Amino acid sequence: MLYHEKQKVVRLVIVAILVLLLPGAIVMNIAIRNAYKSVIIETEINTDFGSRADLENSLRTLYATAVVDSNNYKKYKDSEIKSEKELSTAAFIRLQTTVAKYNEIYSKLSYYWEETKPSDLPESLDLEMLTGGGGE
Image (cartoon, rainbow, N blue to C red):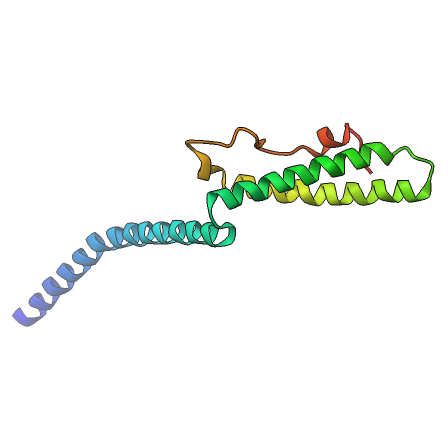
């Protein structure tokens, strides 16, 4: 009978240890995963876009492209000439793609400039503003 009581005590101790350690292990697992994810994200950003200057130059290029396409769209959108109308349509399609890409990159990397945001880059591009409120 003494042997069975010792087994009960051992089982109780094992269960108590598991109950006490399990929540700590779960919290530790979550903390490690979050730290790992943040390192992966930072590495991907640095690998994908290179240095800060390269990133800013890429965004400046996208912004300039959006302005040019916006101007071409506005210039030719009301034209009666078929080739100019096609230029307007092509400019609008490029503008949509450029605005989406610019906004995606800027939003993913906004923390990159927490301390010093480039003053010549808007935080987002608005398709309606660039097209004068109209669209295809």
